[in-house]
Length: 102
Image (tube, rainbow, N blue to C red; front, side, top):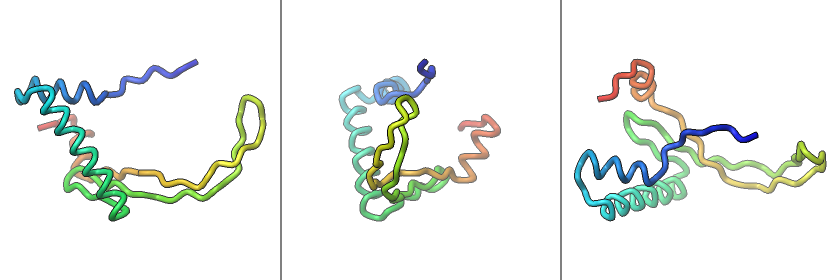
């Protein structure tokens, strides 16, 4: 059974930029693509990226380990990899708690 997720897609963000600011959709899409690329490059280069009043993205290394498939109970090696984690800034937490988005 799959969980029902209500994730915001990149297309929704692009449409919101178009509706709220009026920038054409193809320019809005380019802005989002460029922003994501800048975030990725900065995280890779510096191992972290801090955005004031929003939060910090961290690049963490995970070691190789043994994992088990719960369906067939067979062990598999999970390879070494890098993952991105996010820690929200206090300002963002307060805004989310108070529902006061400005």
